[in-house]
Amino acid sequence: MAWLVVITVGLLLVGSTLWLLPSPRERYQMELRRVAMEAGLQVRLRKLEVPGDREPRDCAVYTLRRGHHQVERFEPRLHAWQLVRGETAFLDPVVAGWSYLVRPEETAAVPVAALAELPATVTALASSRDGISVYWDERGDADSVRGFASLLAGLLAAQD
Image (cartoon, rainbow, N blue to C red; front, side, top):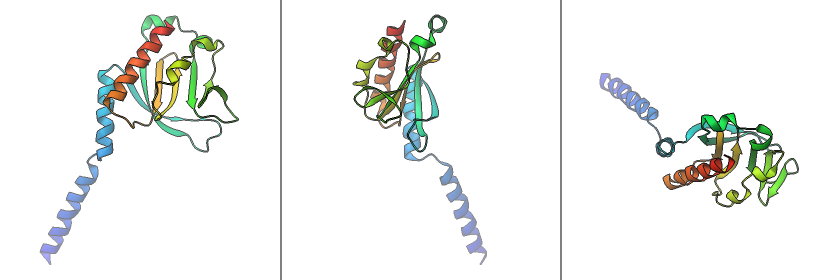
């Protein structure tokens, strides 16, 4: 009887330890985020609220931050915008498949051509005082992250 108790307690301890270990998906996300940080991107988790959606979308937000001189010259009415994938009656369409969540006064600052370069797993693209961000579901590889870093650097330079 004592052996049964010892074995049960041992299995409970081993099971609890295994439960704490990251899953393969979590290890994969950690690797993507490590590559992003090496590329100079900041990673945050956010909920993206889109009018017409029943629930907010969970997204990883990869941001290339603006330099100090870029923040000083940032004008929200010109440089702040947010595009979201999808079209509904609640949103202002930009191009096929993309709509404005936040529209700038001058739409020439919005990189419509860059939208074609984004993979289907990208939910939104945004420009704010912090920097330029891509919202996605982290379904891609390290090359996708490096591609985002390159694309965001180009967009940031174009706003300079």
